Length: 138
Image (cartoon, rainbow, N blue to C red; front, side):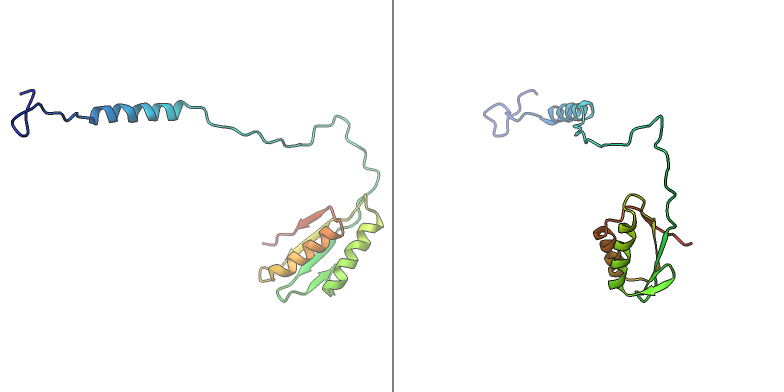
């Protein structure tokens, strides 16, 4: 019976939309998979390969070993120093030869306060230290 009536007087006017929804979902998935993803280029200045590297005329100075223990005490080349003196020591090392700075090797205890390390890094930045490394002890 093609035309069934609910109330006995007219044709059934409900349309079955399930196949239409299925087809539209399949088309949506196809368009989502085949659509190109949006890309945003980011300019990065990478160092370029040099055929003739610049000659090393100066030997680098010995590294500075800065250690922070669990109590927050700072040691500059194994001698304890207050925080106010550490900033001055960094400035003296940078001003000695700004083009040939020593490497600052920072070693922290696992239980050391992050605030002390943050101050040391801020002092190094203010003193314009360029070579900073972290020592990892296993």
